[in-house]
Length: 530
Image (cartoon, rainbow, N blue to C red; front, side, top):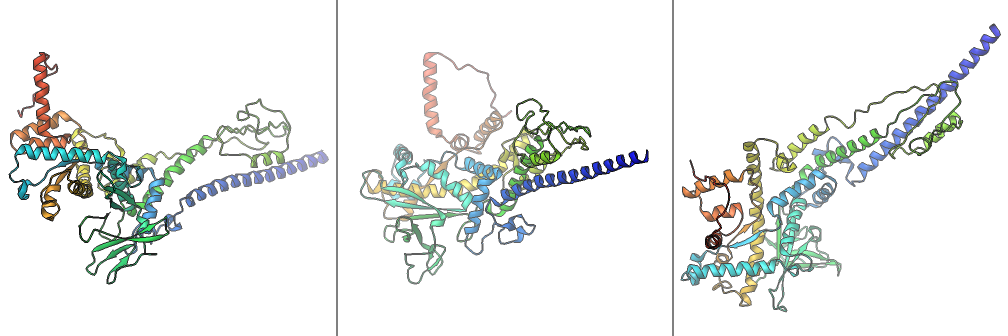
């Protein structure tokens, strides 16, 4: 009995040793899989081409925090472009501002100050109205043509969308206004210049007494007088004056955000948060995919040599195999498994292994709440409520209306600033029409004040969204009845149309309805102030 007992103990010890070896090899294989996942995550981080400091705790105080060293916005511009391409939140922020501010493009409503134009003081109201209508229609026809662009690929409304996006992301944009006498049409064309193409001179010369910084030339008083623009055809910079010394016509229009000499975009100061939040979102998605790869692990009874194949099961689309393989072969097969493919089933384990149901707790149940809180902070820092950024209004009427009004204050600020560019383009265009004799504007070319009076205009874009139009209409009726606002102001706010023209057309339509004796059918709505 003792001899047999010793043999059993020896076999048990050998089996236990083999199990320990197998367990260690299995642990190493699992560590290899985890290592590969960590390596993939690290590669994903580095694929942004951002500095390592972006993922350190000191980033907000570091040189890569999105701020500009001096007046050079190269780093700020580069990082803003990266985060815009990588972060859905950054894209949503830019598109929201762009859609509400510019939309499909701002429409011209000519409003000359006739009392400041001596030659037009004697004009009748009908003459003034005819002048405005003619100019508005001619400008619209010109702006809709793609030959407005120097490259002949965008009309003016499309250009406005492009340059406003550049302003938000890059912090600035440059437009080059070209004039030609070789065309019977309006001679003005517009070329959008990339910010990086306004650079330190490499072929052009700075005028004596002037200074140059990052491609912009300044006179002794600090005013920008010229721009050094890189010509990719000739591989050198070209000096372009800001405006003509004799005519006064503008050649280069530089618009920027901030008070530095080069602009800073709205994403620059929150690049770190946007990048890390974008990475977190991607990694949560990746964790959810990895979690979906987990399958049922079946233990093979100790002493049973039958080992089904790892590649046959559900993933292989075949039946369970009864092929006998060794533990070494099983481990080798496992090392070669691709854990990135869904539907993989490890259908059997060697003896001594146990079935463990593993809950990864991913994706994190607090993921949405955390994302919303961070987005709320970021959107608030840009002056826009989170509900407007997400395009989701879940609060009551008063709260949602208040959020829209607060957002609209910010939008009106951007639109007013953007309308300065629209008005400058309109002025340069009208200058060409006057020189060609197409539009009569006495005193336009000889006096700057008169020229500005002729060019005064209002630019109409998308109007503030209305949650309950009926309530707003009632309020507008009361405002007009009490003299707080005019019909023209209300019409411009609600739809951007022309109040006088609306009255004329409505009268014609009602006359036709009365003539045909077909009354409007509908519910009577009380628009009074009771």
